[in-house]
Length: 294
Image (cartoon, rainbow, N blue to C red; front, side):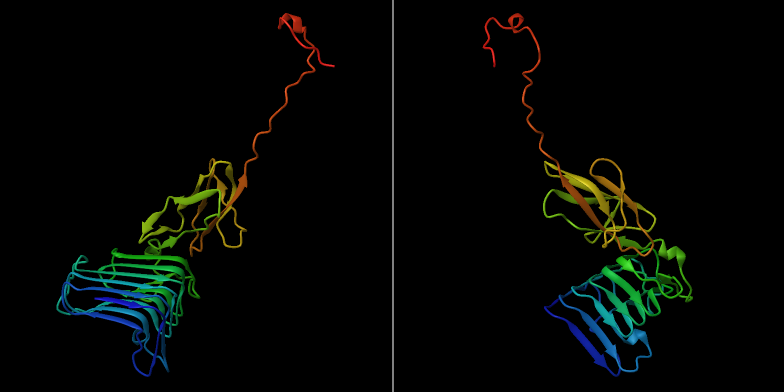
């Protein structure tokens, strides 16, 4: 099944409110949904965040199902932003390979519940090319989550207690936070170089790295240009460290928010130097004939 929506989707209801809800009961299904605008989930007197979710993917039965969802302009929700849930009571020990989920959001995910709520054992990839935040937590994990969840975001705003992920017990899960990957943005110059990163991992086409890792900005320079400095914040206040010719590095901070920008300089062309004719030499020793210069 392929779904392509050229604009935004907004739901507001007294009961459940889901702009995108995918429920899978059979096997061998593939769902591809592309929403070019935003998703907005609102509910009056919302008391259960799971009933108000921008994207909800629910696996109730079946295997070999694949869900791919992309959103072009962010998610705003009175409940959860994104929810990945497994509720197949007939399959108490599901294989992570049974089903796969991929959600890519360009823009921010802002929710009054959890930005991302995950309670599924299946291979799941969530990328937020923007800021992820939630009223209860940026991300909340259920008891079924394992190492098969990949969470990547450009920036994550911690909750009031400084947590980026809370576990099923409602407490900060520092071990899970070590697995968060942060998307590294690179501003490409108009002319002079093509910039790329090193020390990053590709996640659905995004260059990512965990907090604490060293990443590099490398320039493939055009002739006549060189990198003189580089910054890793949008305000050009935090300088990167030079690590060789046209190569700079920095350490990914907790919370992310890395945008790399290089300052290029045009190399001056060498000047032609006129020969020095004032040297006092006996030209007769070097030339059979010569023309004196006044």
